[in-house]
Length: 206
Length: 206
Image 1 (cartoon, rainbow over the protein chains, first blue to last red):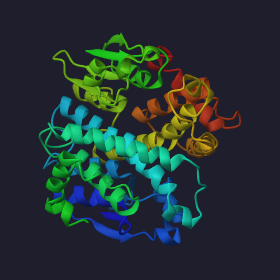
Image 2 (cartoon, rainbow over the protein chains, first blue to last red; image 1 turned 90 degrees about the horizontal axis):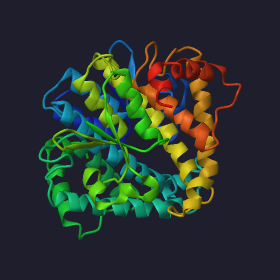
Image 3 (cartoon, rainbow over the protein chains, first blue to last red; image 1 turned 120 degrees about the vertical axis):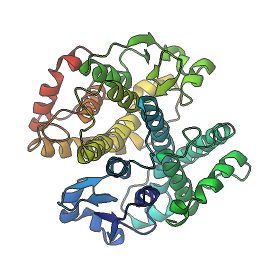
Image 4 (cartoon, rainbow over the protein chains, first blue to last red; image 1 turned 120 degrees about the horizontal axis):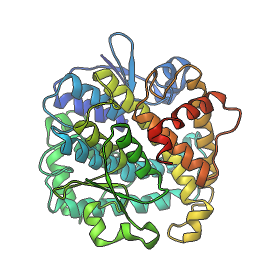
């Protein structure tokens, strides 16, 4: 299986961590986003959204989207379980993962697209005021997480799941590239971050 | 099982259609969003994001988020299968559903929040220019879908899945409340829309 990847990009990182947790080997194929390779006709045939990561199976079929790829990997290698073992867990872990994606990741994305690095590439129109609004939403979500981590060891409660991978990659990307590092005083959030960052699958895929 | 609902809201509609496809009965409990009931302390205990739908199980545990609830329902009532039967389907259907959510639903949401109905409620700050950008993205996605439906009967290929429910509810909401009806000339998209809208589970949950 091949994974179309770009060094430093957060969404392929999610898949690489997920695969390492399951000890699944993926052949990494660099997709040169700086040269817009993800928008070429041949790449769009693999993923009409023109985004990475994409998993290409040995028979040529392709699955885009980090969480969709992760679900495929969970199905072919069920252990360790990262999406849930019973109906309640399958629903609840999905809900936690989705809230991080829909309420945190999307806002980090808006700040990224309207921030200095992407704007200097001149590929997206600036929406004035959008970054200020999304920065505020990101910091508000960090505060919510900090309150939740006062009681919960992990995002979905007492065990590590795909939702922790979604969150640690979001925070690391926001910290490194979007100037949205969580504030120092968010002790519970940082306790969780240190614990998850120490996992080999996470630290080996920085 | 109780489903916290609000008449006309698109996300509870997704769950109601999904449950009807599986012939699962849900007790609908109205949550009065006009009175901000979804932001009360007792509701936030059910869903810290303060959103509907929320599924409350008979033992009091809660699952928020329409797709997460749908996954729970798929686990307790596997037929008809709507999320995928094997590893490839589980990944591919998820990828199609996610692209509709992340690239179409989020943009419809931006147009909704920055449009006249929500802005008249004075609960969200207007981001000037945001609606123009998201309207453009919505129409671009409709054109992509129209091209795809020239070849594919349903969103994920040859059979009806959760991704069709995500799309029909998105388009109906955009048409009715966000002034983003797909253009008349998008024949393949409208062919698909007519077919899915004729399903009893869809037409019985308008």
